[in-house]
Length: 263
Image (cartoon, rainbow, N blue to C red; front, side, top):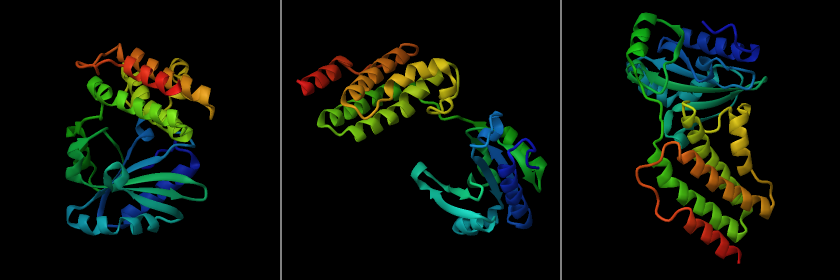
């Protein structure tokens, strides 16, 4: 059953979803993930749901998933998740009041490999679903030190090139991307936490003191300082778990590139 600890707006949408799936015999279960598992659900959280579909009905459901999302009621907008490599996902906005809901359509057999162990919110066959969840291989997509190293200097060079060209919006956007894809995950890794971009790092004063120096205003001097700080923060975070193969002559080559461009 839907968790009574949810905010009223989310609980109401979740109750409608469970009721709709219960009426549709093509669905066998509704599972919850994300903040529903981590215990930090609040008014601004998304509902991350997995809808378990009977195998024989799966092709029809996949072809009709936007219509199914609409049938829940009060759907404002929705689109599928190809941009994140997940066409089984429908990203929805319901309201009023506004509630973001991710609906992922899976078969029971798809639960064999997961990034986290979801919670059963409703099921026709709870014992069978529980068995699949308990036996699932859980593999959170953690990135290695070498993964970061192979990308960091290319991304930082891109930001530097845009800065030197005077494309400050592009530079600011790239620094934000670098913070989310590299610095935030590396900080979380060094703290023994799952790599989740920059999620909730604002509430960590130590993380904030490290990352806030990489956030500039639209000002040439501040952007340059943020770019240099991003390089420095990367080197500091890298030291905790160095890659097996470091990029040759970095950061000197990139520092020289920036200085020559400014001269």
